[in-house]
Length: 161
Image (cartoon, rainbow, N blue to C red; front, side, top):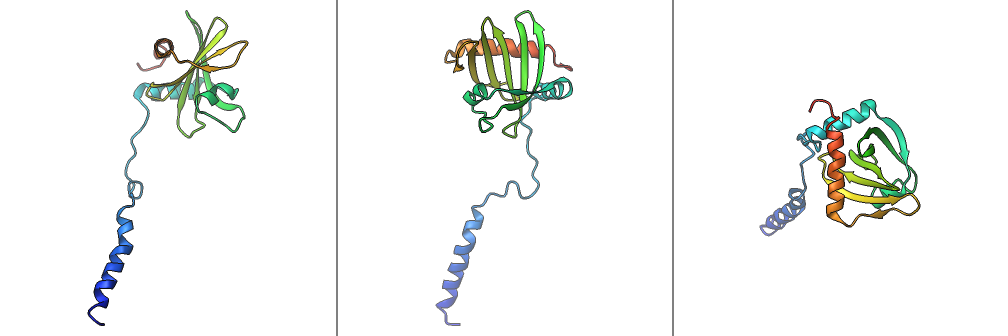
């Protein structure tokens, strides 16, 4: 082999192997994934799965929250209970392959809904008047206050506090 062929082949071999070094190997070797559930979130998911009822939600409100099922109703597992502030409902949604909660309750003729992850971080809030269309709640203080009231209601009912 002439002396100039070896460096070119070595350079070509390194050039072919270089993209492999940029690949992510995080899922290839059985590394453990961390859970996205908080301890309370895990207990609420189990409580809904054990005692809740399968139901379907109309697609309008979840669509405003970014949850879609190609225009069809959204399958959920729901748990409802009466409290001093009316009837409280929590829906467990798994349409995007992750657990999410939709908390809702009626205030007069308006239904207030909050989308939350399992760490109870409010992601989106929607108001849905009985005789109107759903709309996103832009008043962050109002949405956060109502969300905190709704999750406090459910925190009191989660077993193993």
